[in-house]
Image (cartoon, rainbow, N blue to C red; front, side, top):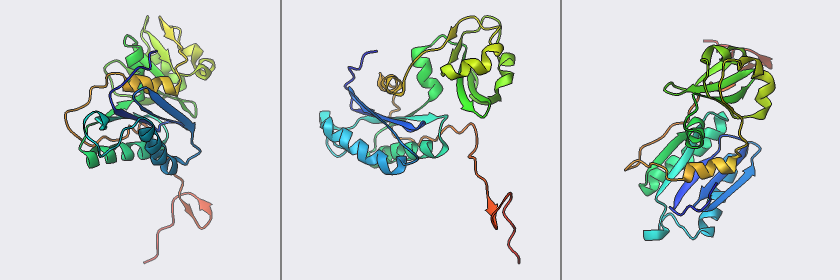
Length: 225
């Protein structure tokens, strides 16, 4: 995959623990341990300086837009990445393009019928061609597949979990595309909107929050009136 990109569009992907940012032909990744809110902006600042691009400049040295991964992925990570992307867009009056993980996959595999992502907990994130992404139990995948469908499986580790669900599938894609390569796909000729409009994270599964009251798990106790 070619990395010769020179469009002054900033890419942000905080959907996974391996955080990735990109600008032109430079892509940087690092593993964040729930620290993306502290790490992201300093890393972006260093990337901009390395590419001799500054937010306030004009002409060839100006940021033209931002592309951000909307998910699915880490609840907090997505919120951080999307907030930073919207901040750049609003503050600099530049367009922001939100791309889901499924959108990124389709840039490489445009003819697939179903894309399957690991949602863990014995569940899957899937998207069919013209449908919205959804969360399903792993044992329900076979009901979503028609005979001869092309199925993309994003993670080798999923094969052991769902191989019995793939009997009706035709072509099965199990690629080895890393986060850096997906960033290159995000930055390759993105279709930016004409002006800034706020983008929102793609939350297919809600936040996993457990409220505690007096040291005991479960619903919080109601305050006495």
